Amino acid sequence: MFSFLKPNPLKRKRQKYDALLESAMLAQRRGDIMTYSMLSADADELWKEIEQLESQQK
Image (cartoon, rainbow, N blue to C red; front, side, top):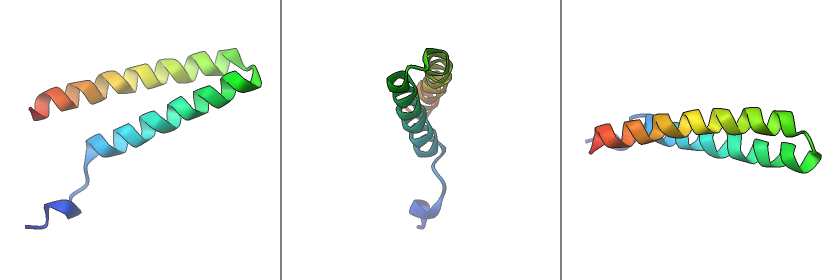
């Protein structure tokens, strides 16, 4: 009945993924390529987790 009140881990991970990509973009614009590559790698790992969760839900 109140399923909309339950936390959605997939939604939370997508928000974190978007934030990581935005931080990586800003680091790249500042010229901090090391931070950009680290944040991009973290975002890629998180994307793999998101894909895995999506495949389990289907």
